[in-house]
Length: 108
Image 1 (cartoon, rainbow, N blue to C red):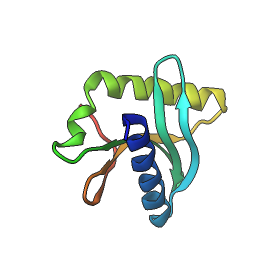
Image 2 (image 1 turned 120 degrees about the vertical axis):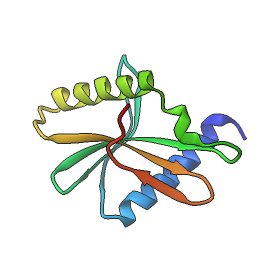
Image 3 (image 1 turned 60 degrees about the vertical axis):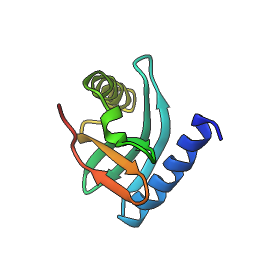
């Protein structure tokens, strides 16, 4: 199975997890010149720009670098401006391994 297929499977699992936690899924795979946002979700008046990482033999969270986080934030601003949204937002991660871990408001 190639990396893209594994990513799609992890994203699908992340979406189901988020829905079970009462997030409204707004968009998947939002692309800008800065990069991609895997999932855009909304809950309790806050937009969540979510990076999905998966892996079996390592800690996937370490693949979210400061430069990756900066690209996600720039892409989030593009989304908000493009859709004329003035709302609170945060950048989160969903880690898909043997179980699913939600890490809210990641920073460096």
